[in-house]
Each structure stands twice: as C-alpha cells, then as structure tokens.
Amino acid sequence: MRYITTIGEVEYDIEVIDDEHIKINGHNFLVDFDSIAGQPVYSLLVDGDSYEAYVYPIENEWQVLLQGRSFTVLVEEEIEKRLRSTAGENIGERKEFHLKAPMPGLVVTVQVGEGQEVNENDVLVVLESMKMQNELKSPRSGIITRLLIEAGDNVDQNQTLMSVV
Image (cartoon, rainbow, N blue to C red; front, side, top):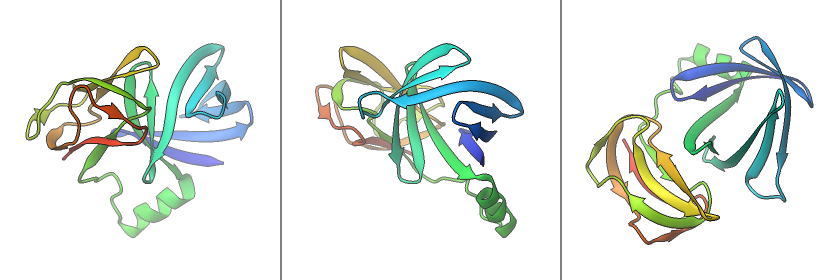
C-alpha cells in the first residue's frame, strides 16, 4: 500500500512493504511500531533506533509528539491524493490550525497571547505530563486567534488549547 504523508509543506512517499518493512522516498527501513498498554503512546523502532511518540487523531489528520516536538501529519492513500489533485482541490491550504493537547496534563506556561503573531516552531505552550515538560510548538506561522487555556489549567487529551490562522 502506498501513502502520501504531508508534514508541514513537505510530502513523503511511503510504501508499506510488509509488517516490518517500509520504504520512505525510495529508502528502505526496518520498523516496529506498537502501542504501549493501549494508550496513545507508541514505541517505534527504526533500523534499531528507539523512539517514543504520542499519536492521536484530530479531524482528518494525526497529531504526533516526538522528541518534544509536535507535528500535524496528513496521511492519504496515494490514489486518493492523485484523484483529488486532478480534480483541482488544494488540500494543502488550511485556514485554521487547532493546537490540541497530545496528552492529559498541566499547563505550565503559555508563551503567547491572543492576537500575537507567531512563527513556525515557536513554543506556544509548555505542558507537563507524567512528570515531563513538553514544549508544544507552532506547526506554521500565523496569528493566535483563540486562546482557550492559561497557566495552571489541567487539560484533557485532544482538548483544543488555541487556534492559529
């Protein structure tokens, strides 16, 4: 099965070869990807290197927290993406991004204010979960339009924290 995965403005061609092998942009990788105790926490082994990631769905995309960075990931079957492109639909154009909590936790600090301009990779919020502080960064440049949390708030997984236009 082939997929087109978009992270930010970058597209990746991913082919699932079998349960342990994938090809990304023509390069082969040995992988093991497994949920830890049924939680949105995953153990990922790529060619022997170990990673831990929080992965959860939001609308038609996935939110991934990996090594302290948050990524919004759009995964489409290759054939569907090509059909949509042929039809002239520009799926890369999104008007508003909703930053959601990747896990339940405590808001330690809010680094931005409503109406503030932010750049891609600016730290927006520091969230503490399981005794670890995680910096949630902006996936793109824009303006904070809705700020729904403040320092000291407890948040649930998938709770919208703010919006960036």
